[in-house]
Image (cartoon, rainbow, N blue to C red; front, side):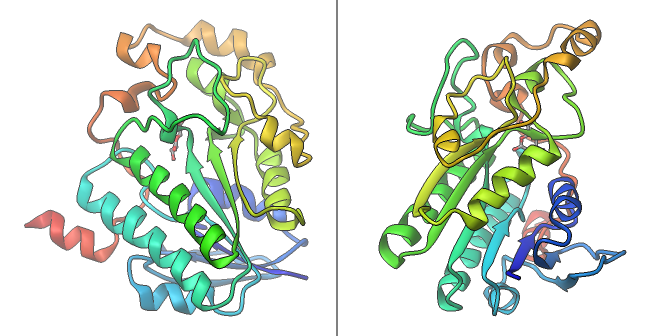
Length: 275
Ligand code: 15L
């Protein structure tokens, strides 16, 4: 059985993934936050990935990494820099030094959030990040490209939409990713023999999708869920939003400067922020 490190395991995506992957892998979970209630086959290592020492410690001896950790929404540069730029570099570099074969990187729809909603985009489009957070996700994808080309690592970048039990608004009807479809995609990233460097969209088989996800389909992804059965209910509750947000795939990320981040800041970023 493979040992898989999940960074950012205490977050929403990590919580869904732990449940879905239970029994298939030995899971080493890491997060800045403490994590309670470990299941059979799980261990926990508290870590701040903005520290290379921590990154080296948690990546030692694993077969693969699902890198979810970081600042998960638009936010202040200091926080994005520490968690998503320095932290992401540390995870890839520590993986290389520890001989980890595969890294699955949770990138985001916000790497391409300035594409309009009337456009269908695939994995080869020029990225159009919708802010600092989106830039950090493009940075992570490009780090992955270097680690694949230069060091032979197998890198699987999943541009996640919104992982949730059900879609919550009009935009999410197009980018929803159900937990079981997330797990299917992650299993492809962990197991597919031909992965070198790939970008795929982490979305369910939504009829309203803005993505040509042929790269994921080519690798065997067959999503089980579609947001459409939820559409009437979701749209009945929807009120008109800011026209800039409504036009773009990234929604409010295209004009807000900060959103509440559910995760704590890495220590260095908190210190810098207070200055
Ligand atoms: C993301 O990248 C965020 O991590 C998540 O919290 C959601 O905001 C999601 O995008 C989204 O676009 O809905």
